[in-house]
Image (cartoon, rainbow, N blue to C red):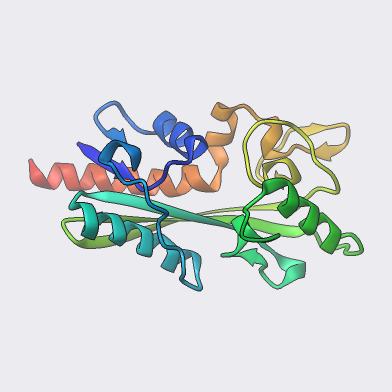
Length: 203
């Protein structure tokens, strides 16, 4: 089965390719000649995922899926949320985004947060969505150099190992560790379960 992943983000493609079985060939936007910026104008993570997936399906006539991810921080009333990638501005700079987040939480004792990924799968014009959620805490400074986005300041609560009496950030884990527990991995697992069921129904 060939599926287009509606992104050119190499980090996302690496994570997804690691999770997908050999029976599914993953294509990027570049592979189908889509070089334009995909629209992300919806007010929710769910809406953005659907908008991107339907844009690719309608304009390139291929089955595809798109994801959208947001970091939702309790003390900031769910921000940055759908604006996570451009929290510090439209230039979408991860360092600036983290700096703004840490500054806004500087005087807060509540550092509870969660990552949410929503995948929108469009096959033959029909959409299904799959959600992955990981609860965690925002660290007071950056740790690790793996991953991307907010990974260096987000410590998932489900990961039991600690380092120097603190929780470990996503950016301190190698890809295999992160893919066991990440929000994207959870959503992808639901996607794969659905695709397996779909494949069986076609046999």
